[in-house]
Amino acid sequence: MNPFCFVITSFGRKPDLKDLKDKHASGKLDPAQEIDFDQIFDKLIKPAIIAAGMEPLIENAESSFGIIHKSMYEKIILAEFCIADLSNFNPNAYYELGMRYATKPYTTIPIIASTHFPLPFDVGPNRTLTYSVDANFQLCDLDNDLKKLTNALISAKQNRNTDSPLYDLVNGISFNNSVAHEKTDIFREKVRYDDAIKEELAYARRAAASSGVPEKEARIEAISKVIEKHKPLENLESGVVIDMMISFRNIEAFPQMLSFIKSMPRYLFETVMVQEQYAFVLNRIGTKSNPVDAVKIAKAEAALQKVEEMGKASSETYGIWGRIYKDKSDEALKSNDIPTAKVHLENACEYYRKGFEFDPRDAYPGVNYVTCLELLGKTEEAARLVPAVEYAVLSKMKRKKPDYWDYATLMELAVIENRFGTAEMYFNRAKPLAVESWMFDTTIKNVGLILNYRKERGKSIHDLDTLLKKCFG
Image (cartoon, rainbow, N blue to C red; front, side, top):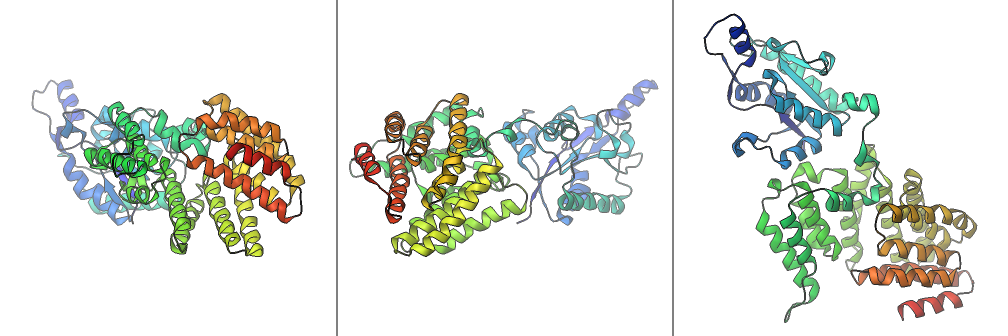
């Protein structure tokens, strides 16, 4: 599929403000000539985008009585490429270009008509491509300008050179500095969006069982009804769409989550955030299938490989990748194939290591890295890393309200260090924060693996076995 190129532009026929200003300055009362922006888009911009192997994406805000919706802002931010036509000094176009520059370091191409110089000081001519128009504002060197714009887009695709003055000067800002493992939830929880839909989804995730309908099925049905009510997805804000996706994830409705991700608008589907969740759910479905669906698991790895090849891999990418190999190890254990299980565990350990080294603030790959080292019998190395992972968890708990996973992680670290009394204390703190029963299953599984691998190595498991029975019965 071709990547999207969002176009910031005016629409329809507009008075040429420069011509109007010149006429007023000379005392002429003639009406200003008009600029046909649709013609410029149809003859120059759209063909250049297609010739560069991209797909044009526009949103005509004027069809909504001049109100610029957040959905357009999201396309400006999320589309991989962007052209901004600054002709006629449209303030909206400059505002939207500024938004693009603030959130994307590269792949933005401003263009302007040759009659509309000089540019404002802050929009450097070295960043702006000029297209030629005659005295009647008709494209007068179309072949040459089409070639120039096409080449500029191809160059942007191949080189990804920084073109945002903000990133040139201050190396970007904010959201990209968030811990990768937290980004999806931050996007859902912190980005302001339609409160009514947010509330509908919150109720849907907590739908109770009814006569003949189990609780999980009732929740799937409730979430699906909210989605159907508010379609099409491309008209919704991205925060809403992410919330819908995570609502399925929260109740482990993985087939529905996968179908929903596939139905997302491409400008959102192709973001790293969603691609990581796509890999996550493919692996979960593939692993839970009977027999295991190796094709889906391979597709999950391919999605992560693509993210890495694009240079956009993060601690979350590697954390999900590690989980794929940890699941492969568990599957080999079920067949009592210990050598294969350990090979997969070594691979899982390597990906978790990459994730934790990429961002030591992210406790998720960190605790899994430590646990894999413990399972492999590399106990001294695991012990050296426990304080670093523990610090990451405690730091997160200062930034955000503690949740089940914070205390469950601290419990797991205490188990690895044989601090069983402390582990029990953390479990008691985690227990009331478990909003879904499957959360306990994850913790039982991890601690159970530690017990089984210690038993296989001939280590004492009495205290750990006692802890498991005390906590989980």
